[in-house]
Amino acid sequence: MMKQEPIPFNSQTIRSDFDVNERISVYSGDAIDFLKSIPDEAFQLIITSPPYNIGKEYEKKVDLKEYINQQTIIINECVRTLRATGSICWQTGNFVENGSIIPLDIMIYPIFEQLGLKLRNRIIWHFEHGLHSTKRLSGRYETVLWFSKTDNYVFNLDPIRIPQKYPNKKHFKGPNIGKLSGNPLGKNPGDVWNIPNVKNNHIEKLDHPCQFPVELIERFVLSLTNEGDWVFDPYLGTGTTIVAALRHQRKGAGSEIVQKYVDISLDRVQKELAGVLKTRPMNKPIYIPPSENNKETLLYESY
Image (cartoon, rainbow, N blue to C red):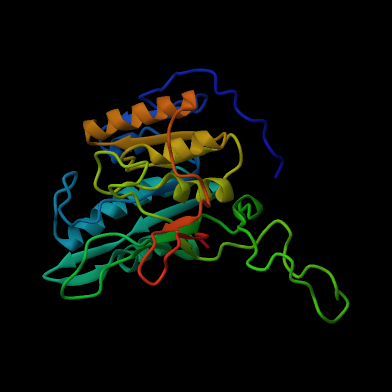
């Protein structure tokens, strides 16, 4: 696919309705209302983390069957608005009932399957911090289901390659003896991503209990879209998806029902446009504090 010219980000216009000729759209209201105003095949990437139905401040906990029905309505509209070359990434955790967990990705998968989408990866997002369980092992990962609408989907591996573990390793026999055995641009990051979640000491932490880290979304934006494409998040939260899209010369749209989070999103988008938004850089080494057995501070790469 031909690379598009970067969008000149010199306007501060942020629309509340969707206009394909603009580059930012933040809707204050219900996702389904916004989706119904979107034309068919408008978005190249739809990425989101829907409410987990566990009673957070922005959701009302309902029966699991009702929750799945709600998700089905949203997902149907999302698929309608997705390009033939596009992808949907649905990030989920667990529904908890009477101390028993139900993995939501297992419950959500059949909805996409019935709509004819193809599961390309089930990505494990691993992180080190969270609530400490007392009657089971503490949860330290969530999953992202990456679906493509067709077999002709955009996938750019090079922008998300990570450093080789042994960058100077060479073939020791055969026709390529003496040549580098790994790709000099880096290796495929695989389907297990170790990226810090946004907790109290995270540079991106705001007044929201379940924030996306920007670097998580950046990987999807870079690999599943091209410059100038639209990226949409039906549960926008603090605006992370739009920030990641704008950072890489894409267009960003999202809907959010809680006005407090809409305001936070608009503030973050404005700061990103001004080049002053503070975020954790992609692939920054993860900090390990010193301990009794380790007198020196260590760093290890997040791959």
